[in-house]
Length: 290
Image (cartoon, rainbow, N blue to C red; front, top):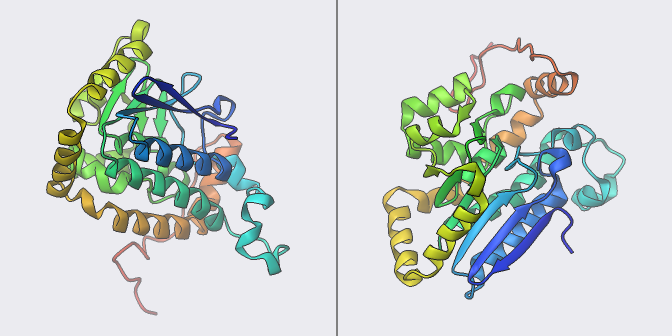
């Protein structure tokens, strides 16, 4: 029984709903695990010919649950990591790692699924939610949808395929703008930049996205599957699993650093963060020797 993820069927269309609106559809370990279960089920079920991924309550997904991470996660979810040392405090990185391992597996499965995967974005898609939406084949947004990189607000490096897919979708210069300046994009701007497929009117948003999914489900799914595989190869997306591992490693490491500790405090205290660390130790750059 999944608590915060729902699976529904409408004929040959499968619908996955992240249903945790009280926490802006953010992901703790349990929700990320259920999302992986739903993603694998819908990707591998041959009777499902198209999949819609959506969020409940006017939010798509806001990424990892920072309050859950700040509290040290749930012991029942994490105890198996070091059962002999359960009283030893764990870093934030370990909790992030458990969420990301489930979420990255979901993203990999959806990218390789032999069927169209549609993100239905109504409301905010930020950080991990942003990456999750970008990993889908088509992205439809309501006029109230927003898209935001958001990782830098808390001193994190980016994950959930965002550093892999963003430059492929919008180009290197735009990707750097999204990462460094962190604009919150409206649905219209996101479409102009090539991040999403289309903006769908609010008064019939869910119905129109479902209708598009049914049109795809009635199409030549075997031909779609092969063409999707070839396009993924042409864009280098067949390397996504390697890159997801890199994202997981670096984000988990950054989550144990001083910048994330300050970013998390600022998030919880509802104030701008104050980052003061030296500009050394970047990925691919060795710090100077003393």
